[in-house]
Amino acid sequence: MQVRAVTVGQRVSFPLRPGPVHRAARFASAAKAAFEEAGYEVQSLRLATQPISDILRRRAPADAPDLARDVEAAAGSGGVDYCSLGPVLAAGSEDATSLIGQIPDILAATEGVFVSVMAATTRDGVNLATVRAAAEALVRIGKLDAEGAASRRFALTANVRPNGPFFPSAYHRGRGPGFSIAIEAADLAVEAFRAARDLDEAADALVASLERHGHALAEVAGRLERQHGVAFRGIDISPAPFPEKARSIGEAMERLGVGRFGDHGTLFAAAFIVDILKRARVAKAGFSGLMIPLLEDAVMAARHAEGAFGIDHLLLYSAVCGTGLDTIPVPGDATVDQIAPVYLDLCALSVVLDKPLTARLMPMQGKRAGDPVRFKFPYFAPTTVADLGEGSRFSWSAKGRWKPGG
Image (cartoon, rainbow, N blue to C red; front, side, top):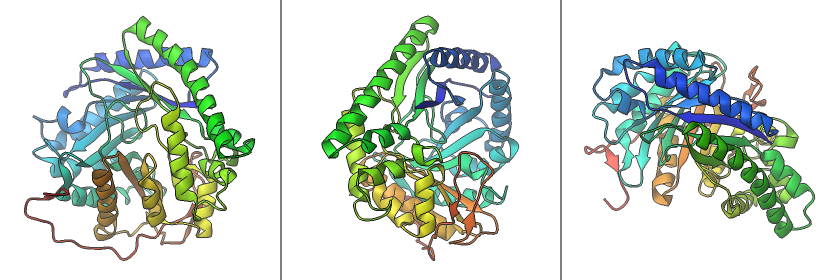
């Protein structure tokens, strides 16, 4: 098990005052040293700000690329690898669609800045105009590069809570700085399920492993909080994978009893693992649920290439899992009318079930559904392009949102 990220949350302003960002970066470096001294490799240091729509509330949307460049430069000078400018919030933002229109320019102007659009909450329902604007933005983002380097830094989100560590959806809330930890722990599930004789043993073994590592990480985090005055927000215990069989949540599910990831029984296995994560007594943050990122998981990627599952299956699993549709390669010529309905389906699940979900779709230039795709990026496995279907076109309501019951 490794620490995928130490994510420090910090409020920023525009024009940017670099001092707070520099202090956050220094703390992140101190945290990395402390966790590595305790025996945990730290893959990346990250900075998450408050929502970009809050930062630029009294500024022009066209200021967004300058903000992104400034934050990336200030954080990068202190050793931070990636920055999240948080979501454009559909609720409470008077000019959300204009700001969403700047997202392709933000991503083009930077290399390590992530941004998202929160298009739905249980309280406010689904903002239909925001969903369509996000789909329009993704079409433009997909044209920025051939391998999805820009689109992997963008997601549509729904009901995502603040102060979690995983990107692209991370954002900060609170007057002072805070930090949370993301773990890469699919290998713990593989090991726990490999030796188990039945489901009960599998569950008990994974709970014990998560609690052992979670308590060790929390002990280090508590010392950092006391020494530096930066609030510890918790650990996202979602067992994130890496594209190797030994670190694959798909492999873990197949060891649990699923014939192939995507076969009947996969939904049960997903719900079973989520229940294990709920049982683990750890200081939790973020999703702390099951992650099914297609490109980051070697077994899932292989099964998708075999035709074992598609986007509809992943939406079904999203009803019980943690993060939704993550790192899904889609055709390079995908249209707004193909992308927006997928976003709507995800938002509907999130609002009706009152759970956080995200969609990170990645258009592949020159590729059609079923075409093979390979990546130079070491965190992605080879697979095939997902099929988005023919698409749907809705006549958006005059009030611009949908909420169950009104």
